[in-house]
Image (cartoon, rainbow, N blue to C red; front, side, top):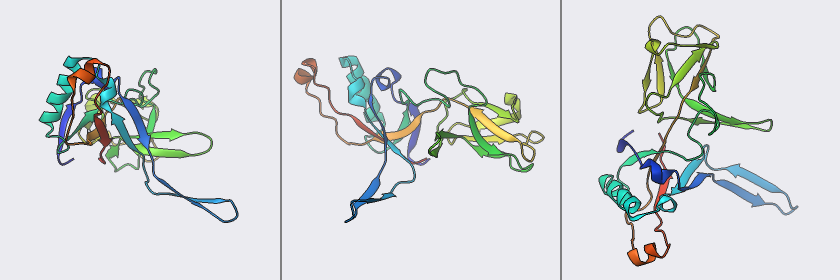
Length: 212
């Protein structure tokens, strides 16, 4: 990913941020009272306000230093979503069978990490481009694959099996992992008023997800 620094936004601040997925839907009201709805974005785009996680002057300085190191909006970075950061639920333990990421054909060695959100009514699949270092576990046909038999590109979320370990035709490939969201600052300016900060007013520090 061009213009991206493989560093994570300060975790203690990220855990207190507000925000989440945003979608774009066009809705046209018809003369008979019904609606036509059209999805403008194929995937959701997450937006956060890091200001809500700032609790002290030290936190504020940590954000300012991080902002300067990224040159404002110029460089993207990793951000840990306080709720959605695993292949499973937030209070569950990552398992090698959490997410189906592909089916073997005997020749394909590379598989992209993904996460599916589904219920009886529908489903959507999200590309995971920024897995957390050391968190990825893989299974093929229900059996855990030793780490020596595959490599992980932690900058792109790509799993590549070694020669001799490529999944056979029809074998289901699954993965478990923790992950970060690739984001950037959505402003080139942070306004700070210490008098208002001490009175409880927190500056807005918007972040927006960037496409992998």
